[in-house]
Length: 75
Image 1 (cartoon, rainbow, N blue to C red):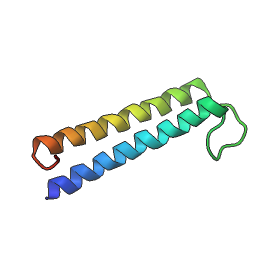
Image 2 (image 1 turned 30 degrees about the horizontal axis):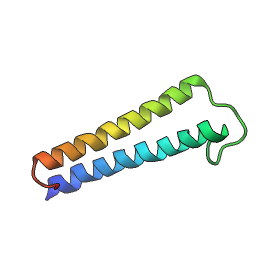
Image 3 (image 1 turned 90 degrees about the vertical axis):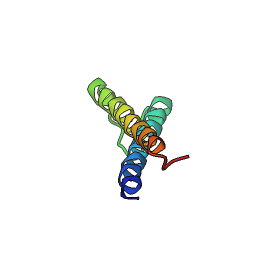
Image 4 (image 1 turned 135 degrees about the vertical axis):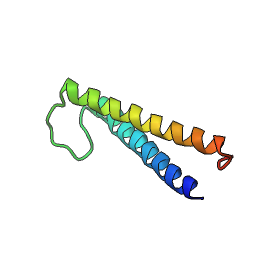
């Protein structure tokens, strides 16, 4: 039970990180501005860091799903 709570929590945080940052990046590519930001342009290094954040969040969520499935706690 503790494994489900610990790994599941990290997986949920990773998924929220990936989905939330991905949605903000999608809005930036559609409208040219981030939610709640002023009219300043974002540099290339900042965009790369945000995409890396999406990848890391998705990797954490995928690992948590794999680990919980392998342990028989999910599905």
